[in-house]
Image (cartoon, chains in turn purple, blue):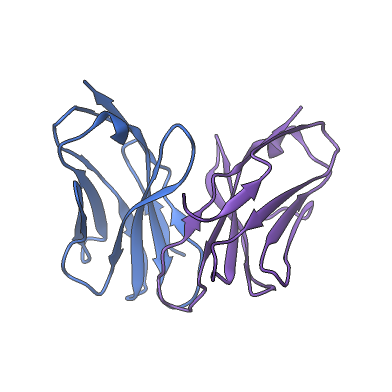
Length: 115
Length: 115
């Protein structure tokens, strides 16, 4: 158990719909990352938050957005869903100390299937 | 930009034997960290081993060890006394030492373990 909690574990939804994925980081971790893992594109970094503020942005579509709340949990919002958005979405966390190279711990992921 | 390459899409090993998974990376940075993550069929991302670039000594965690060749930009993972539970996807990852940058992943190597 990494200490990173993600809900829901599985989600099936229709094209055009909107979903929210939720993540609770490890206790004490200020930094949260979102990754997408699909069959054809491997593990892609989407976005990073640190203590409520966006710190880095990767290949995140404009239809996707995220935020980190004062209690440090994070949500990834996916809207106008397309079949190609079907993937495993990981949340990960770490302390956020710059340059420390700390290990990033991953949650179990949220399986999203768009039909 | 940094890149990580895993040139072996699949590897196999007999139980109790030793196997080495290859990883090369490209960077102009001198301070960075390298990781191997294991992804079993459950899809959870589990840290296997971590190496700081400034340390010449190769990291070791029980049956897992790395061969870190900084000049060659090579970071291979050796699994000794392979067990059935080692069967998984293995991802090599790079992280900058200059910021709280994301992990950059290779495409993964699927390891099969035969009894």
